[in-house]
Length: 129
Image (cartoon, rainbow, N blue to C red; front, top):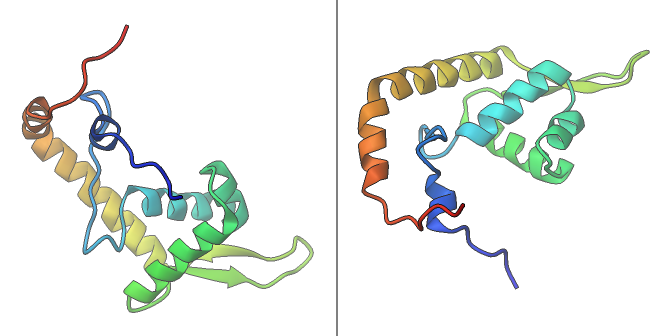
């Protein structure tokens, strides 16, 4: 059948884990932000996918979805040469990554207390151990 759904505790995390921010109808969130950052670092979709323990096809699907959501593509191919081809962020991709990272950091700082209080209201299973 399908993939087993995550438990509420896993989905919402624990007070020690950072909350996540999804911006503009899920066009970018923590997973896509990490994928973009790894592509910027490695200049390789396959290496970025490997580091995220994700298949290349899934990484490419996420990139295609992001490229379709913005006015200009976020990721582009680099023509092969002596080192082979690869991928890199476009100027728009770099800007989106920078803006999302800044929004995420500012929102965490501004809402940390409220997020802890909200987390305290969740019906989570008791910690084992």
